[in-house]
Image 1 (cartoon, rainbow, N blue to C red):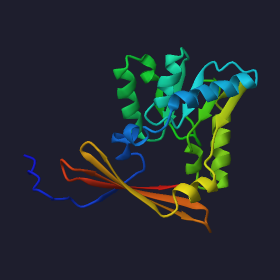
Image 2 (cartoon, one colour):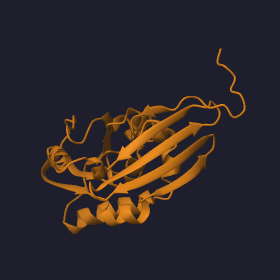
Image 3 (cartoon, rainbow, N blue to C red):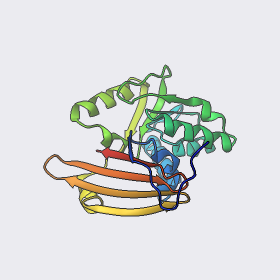
Image 4 (spheres, helix red, strand yellow):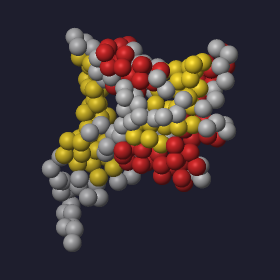
Length: 217
């Protein structure tokens, strides 16, 4: 029998991998992002270069927001992510929307993709590439994604700049509430190493469980 939580009681914080505890609140955490506009922009870039989008892959797909957007437009789209927790959320969300692309989700790191398909378009959006810790890792990620493209395929990715880190993440903190979950975000930027660190302390106020994630990019 689970012990009843006493008022104000908190359990010992547990360090977890990035995008594990966050997966539970990720969609609300990112509700300021207009995925519809971002998806339109990907299509604009494809057509700008005279390239039909064709079969798409969302590398580092998270909870499947982009997959859902492209599926609504009638595209066949796959997704890969190294976080099992995020993929589980993606699968549930896509199933809930009655979309059968949930079956196109694969656990895979973009530096060593384990998909057998050949894609017309591979995209990796919203700062996902910034999580590659070194230039060598970035090169591996680019090569990994290029290996999944057909001969005329297009790779699209974005990267957050140092200006964004200095403007929005240098010694910045906030406390957010998402239903039963409380999220304390503390961000720092190391100008010497050019690394941005964000600590997320996520508390389930119903159970008292506290999980801490450290994101470095």
